[in-house]
Image 1: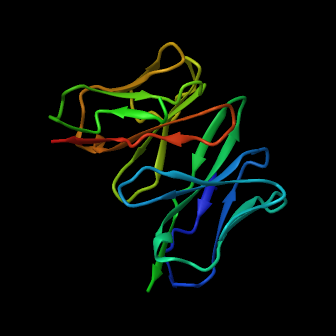
Image 2: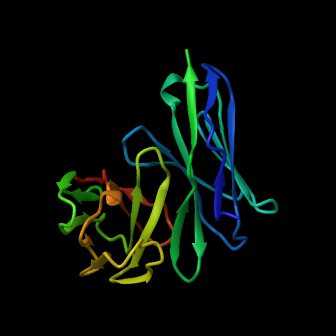
Amino acid sequence: RKEVEQDPGPFNVPEGATVAFNCTYSNSASQSFFWYRQDCRKEPKLLMSVYSSGNEDGRFTAQLNRASQYISLLIRDSKLSDSATYLCVVNIPSGTYKYIFGTGTRLKVLA
Amino acid sequence: GAGVSQSPSNKVTEKGKDVELRCDPISGHTALYWYRQSLGQGLEFLIYFQGNSAPDKSGLPSDRFSAERTGGSVSTLTIQRTQQEDSAVYLCASSSMDRAAFFGQGTRLTVV
């Protein structure tokens, strides 16, 4: 099983739609979780951290489910500018802070 | 500096030559990471530094790849005897402890 898995998509959604992505991780001891956004031919940029209690930033909501070992990202009222690849990131605890990136989920918001 | 700085931004080299890629992390960040991303692919972990030591080198693809970090700051990734399959974007990121990592803009390496 991969350490971090994501559905590669693409998810094609109309403007204004709500879309959700999940990301599963294999190491139950992982403590830190993040969502990044990557635009074509650009570096990944931090979208939001994921906390146990769940957190929201405008149209974006992140959740952590430790029992089932997955994190989720919900985007409400999708905009054309949300089109990008969304990467989930999990730390692999081994006395260090090694971050493993999922391969990403491609989102296309259509006019 | 304000962000992670990588140089050069682009590098074209002939097969068999050695290349050095540089990463200048955010000031005060103790952790530094190197990743590689081939066109249309996900991020591939290469190596991680905590301070000047590299607890995890498991992602280095071959012994042609090496990296060092000095003074707990700047890191250099060296690829010896480059091959065409080494062509990719090499991304460096830094973080403070287990906080989020921030990326440089990457070095696009093309081996011809």
